[in-house]
Image (cartoon, rainbow, N blue to C red):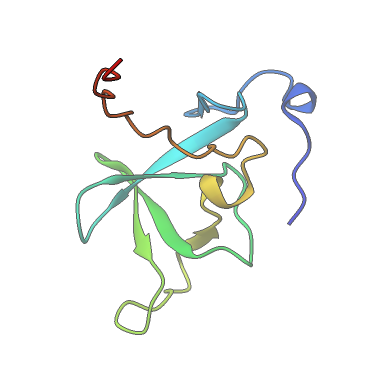
Length: 104
């Protein structure tokens, strides 16, 4: 799936917030299994891995598609934003150990 750059969105779709890395709009799906929020692209896609639907009081709820929890037809499939975010996180820097003083 190829998404347009952030500049072509002309604002944000309703209910979206910007990604802290790339600025593109994202939706948050509340995972019904773990309760965590999953950032997804705002446009449903047939190649998505998150099955979600609107709940009247809880917003967008869903789950990752798996053998135990398959996709249900009234739900829509969404792509996880991290999979297509143009700004990938780099390697984390490890803390350097303090070096002992030289003997001379």
